[in-house]
Length: 593
Image (cartoon, rainbow, N blue to C red; front, side, top):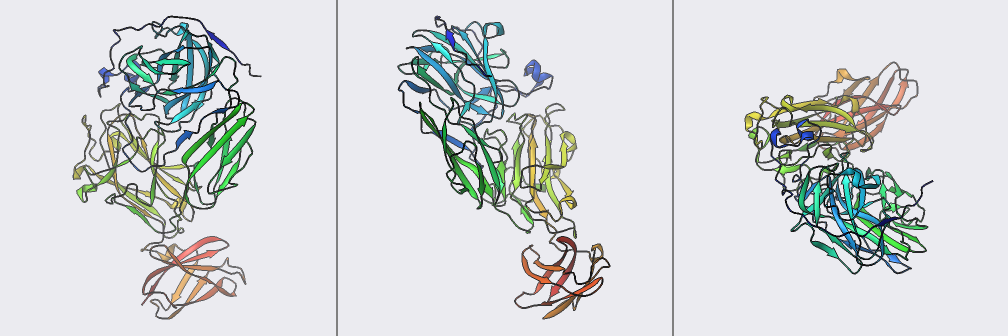
């Protein structure tokens, strides 16, 4: 049983200090790293965050309509969500101007992981490195709502403050993947945000736990509070389990609202049901697109509305067509791909005009691990769902890659995955890193831009996923603050392509005449065909588009035939895929004159 603790913050004066060294930009040399960084445990950087470059990616923005209490006396105070810097966490002071209870915080979080919140009576100044001076209010696992977007921290604060009293707060990630974004300030101890009830002061950025500090820094966040006689209304919050799905996919939504809502009013444009009132709805999406989600959480104390824009993405299936990408187009990502920003930090794959595969074009795709430390995240460039043709010919893929690590310790990797359930789970197909990924095993201590000779072509067999539908291929950066990683000329052959070897067929297939002018007879022979069993024949263009389906006429044990008429089929090469018992059993070439 969870008990509610109401903490009283004693009166204390507000102090400011000087002499804390201002933050310096982290260098790319081991000698400039912290002790943990030098040991290779984690590569923290107070300045490795950057604003989104405008790359088209699914950004799950959130906004609140605002709390509407029935009992007056509850409100919020916001600092800023400008970001621009970041580390593990912030220390800052709050002074009450009237008697209030601080109920909850929202923060500017990048990545997903645990957030801890501490408090102390009086200012934090003088206790930056003294863990014993602080009391842990709580910790919780947090999923970022996106860089620059408020993320509710589901920890009831319950700190009671009398007029004129000050409390210090320590708002921090604990190294499990969540980073606290904040903003460079002007003067530590200066009031940054205030209203009639409270003041929030400029503080410091600091490493976890109670580690190196940087000043002045402005905590990016929202304080939820009530006057001492009011009860807080709900604060709406929710999450979906799988936000990128195929057509017909199901998303399970979970209510995470604070302060005991009694009713829930949801809005799911494009979903079914579209306006449920249950606490944790299950929603099906039947058309491709990007959709908003809204929740109004209510009880007798009031209500709160949270809307997340572009929250659910339903993907379009590309069919059997081979997938190629040379990154020469004006749009990135192109219509056949999408970006997965694992850390929700705006740092992801981007188009680059400095190099191209073997120097044959004008552009490629790269991940700038030299400038950005994304240790712990798995940012991906993914295909839309693809249908793979069959086992003959076996599907495969090729791509050009260029990389050189910064050093033996600051080194990155490329992993390639395949999903056969529309991105719900992934299986690894390929992983290379460091000098093994490099074409010439070089180590380069400046930002890497490959020459034509520093590219290599890699290939991956895809026989294990032949015949599967809704397959997603994922190129994943595993960054460790090393160097830029480049990819170009992706070519995914789904199986509906030239070069079929009829000898690989499970069935003996004879097409006569072949080439065909107006009509051919397709004879299929295999001893396991049962008498009177129907075999399906699908005719595909080279692009993988299905143009005709035939049913065989069974004549005797182990043998069946079908008649193919040209009708409106154009001259060219086609493939006939044999399906028996719902399984692909062979492929034959057909030429129409």
